[in-house]
Length: 357
Image 1: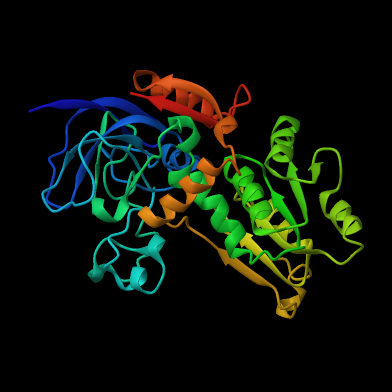
Image 2 (image 1 turned 135 degrees about the vertical axis):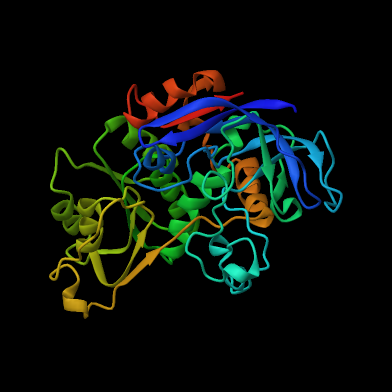
């Protein structure tokens, strides 16, 4: 039986490289040879045991690669073709998907509205931190990579870019809006870029790392605030003349950033939450205006499917957004445990790590 290398969840605190069989291809699947993948913050939650997955599961959900083998029912693609697939890989047959929520697609109609059901790679099926990944429902999920784009340029599309843009879309940003994005990690930086594309006239980026704030300016931020140096809430209220922002995007997943995102909202504003929270949240009474502020709190899981990926690839190919700068480090798959140590501890200015089998 042909074997491959894969990063496997063993137990909380331990992901290690193991030998696993190369997956067999079903009629609706595609076997993709991974050329580049990466580590996501969600993978770190898995590593720490904060998000449960089955022991022995291959981790990772951001694939760039080449079609090695196609199932007999898959049309419109060819072996040897360079592709990506979204972290969310729906089959578009579930109630949730047909209701317009592809991210919540459980993979078959019987799963209904299972939360996060569309996230299968590295969650409910083997993921992408391996030599090969089996893409289910391939005709719905494979997106060809345009000629001339590098792996690093498109590496954010499957998850980080889709998630950040979803945060801007869910925030209902309109032309001329004032928007604040809390946390300028990879998702926050993509949300900043998304807010610019949506037409925000003033974008405020908040983080505690000046280097990330510098990148935020390149992504479209007009004002950058280091929370270590200023009272962010007071400063934002001053910048808006006490009115508050039209929309705030929370991209970290902590009580403090969630509260601050709520405190700076105007009456009727939208808080778009992208963070992955690892403990219960509380909503402060004053910031919530006792429930009478006409505010909206919206959560998002990145949309998936080939049409979403096609649109994101078009944005990259157009030159309107360049996310290559987010890839700060490269590791071979054989050294993925070192890459996890770097990324989980946020050392050496890391934003995203490109993993190369």
